[in-house]
Length: 499
Image 1 (cartoon, rainbow, N blue to C red):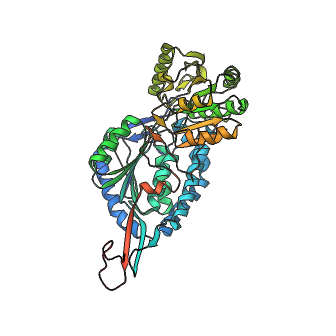
Image 2: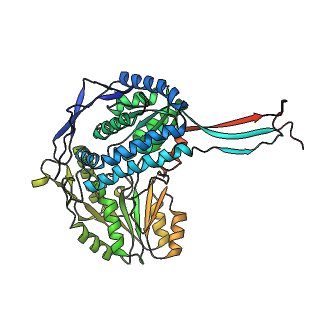
Image 3: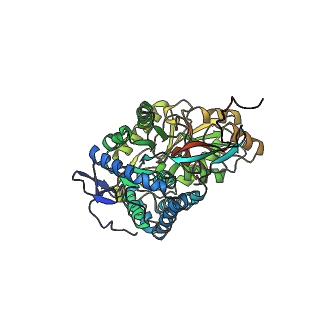
């Protein structure tokens, strides 16, 4: 097992290209060992004001840099991330807990996003279209919005940051970024990479601190014209409400209650692999995690048997160990919440087949670990089948038909990801049409989004915007319509048209 030194005992804010000291701090804890890694600043509103002022000044010049030249910075960022992939991955595992294999995948996602969004520097396409009057030219183009605020969560501390910051940067904006206090190291490392890649001072500013202070100040700052947030539904609703009062753009990516549907003709071994990866990867702490298995009653018992056998082989521990498949929960508060849902499931009548308890002995003594958990005989209206738990807990819901499976899948307030295992092509196409989620997988689990497709969901999962893909640019740009009249006279649209 490899361990790395962060080389600093305390992090600083990154404002206008300078590392700014903050006196008040709190410890960042490795969830696998309970050990302190580093001290993270707890900034005040004043730090946000300084960062916004720096971003506002830098953005005016940055917007004048041709987009292909702005993109060159992202190419350099991607190459540096590629060179440091293993270091970044190990640091990510230390602060977040996810197993090293997943950490490498997350860093790779950031690398992919750098190169993909750099390509958009030559593809920030607008449109030309015929004007309705003679000797008149009409077109549209994207324009930067100015200063954007991004607020990122702890469960994907570098991937989600790149989903948001890279399109904002290439579009000509400047960024004020508040990372999660649980996982600040990736923000520190990415800020250093931006600096090394030659990003002008002030284009990206990192302000560490509590959401109730730093996040709130960002939401209310009049110079920040966009807030892009990933996190809890309660916080997202509050942000949307406050931004609405200010007529500020807001992009929300929030919770999920994702289901894997297993039909009676499915490849059950493949389904088990998909469920295991989706449910217990990142210890179930991701918005796309599978927390419901909707299974046809004809194959329910067989699926349960195979799933239990596979779960029994899962290794749980420190993710820096290459043999470990399930890492820790982020902190003790997360463990407490999961325990509460185990009791709720029992009280509702769910049958506990596996897990349901905290791991506290031997190698798990000092970290925050929870056994992968499986309920069966759940009904669609149970709280464990409706509410996001954010832990390694799965509920099996039996159904008698394809139509019922679709209905159960759609019967939650979220709409992020869904999956169906079937070999019936007709069911496949009906599922693609009828599952009301932003992402649909066929014969795969509920996770595995690729950066060149839009990421996001329907209903309570968000507010219609998307991270990644070219659709991410919509959040960070405004459409500008341009008319050039070369007739030499005043022409009035809709009035001077020849009928």
